[in-house]
Image 1 (cartoon, rainbow, N blue to C red):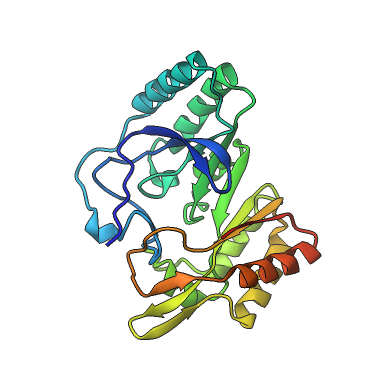
Image 2 (image 1 turned 60 degrees about the vertical axis):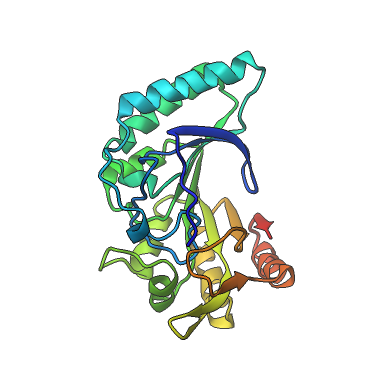
Length: 259
C-alpha cells in the first residue's frame, strides 16, 4: 500500500516534474485523505486506507502559513515558480476553496508577484459555480482527463459521484474556453483480472478529439513514477508517450511529457 501523505498545510518548495520550483498547499489533514476520486495509481493511497476525523485546515490557517513560508523564503533569497494546490485529496472540495484562492492571489501579489498559482484538480467539482469562478482567477488550471470512456474512468479513477461521466466532464472543461491545462496519466496493468490500458487506439483517438473540443493552452502527459496502491500497474514506455505527444503536437497543442 502506498502512503505518501503531506504532513503540512504549506510544504516545499519541491522540484516538480511538470511545474518547476513549486510551493505546495495541502487543504487537508496530515493524517488523512479526502477525494472525490479513488484512483488506482494515487501516490496517497486509497481513500479507505486514510479516513480521518481531523478537521480541515481553516481559511485563516492557510493564509497565515502561506504568508510565513513566503516571508521565510524571501529572507533566504528564494522565490517559487508556482504556488500549487495539491495534497491529500481534491482541493476544490474544501468549503472555503474560493476564499482561500482570493487570499492566495493577494499574498502572491504582495510577496512573489512573478509566481504563478496552479490548481491540480480531478475536474469533479466544476459544476459548483463558486469553484469554477475561483479557478478562472488562477494562472494554471490543471485538470485531469485520464480517459474518454466511462468504463475506463470508473476503472482507473473510481469517481464517487454516480452521475460523473465523460460527457459531463467534457462539457465542463470546454467552459474554460482554452484557459486550461489538461493532465493525463497513461498506464497499463490489470485490476480484478481485467486489463487496464488507456493507450488503445480507440482511447487515444477519442482523447485527441476531446483535446480539439477543449482547446487547452497546454497538455501534460505522464506515467507512473511512484509506488501505486494497486500493485499490478506499470509504466507506459517512453516510446509510447512520445508517440502520443507527437500526435497531439501535430494538432497544434503544446505538450509536455514526464516519463
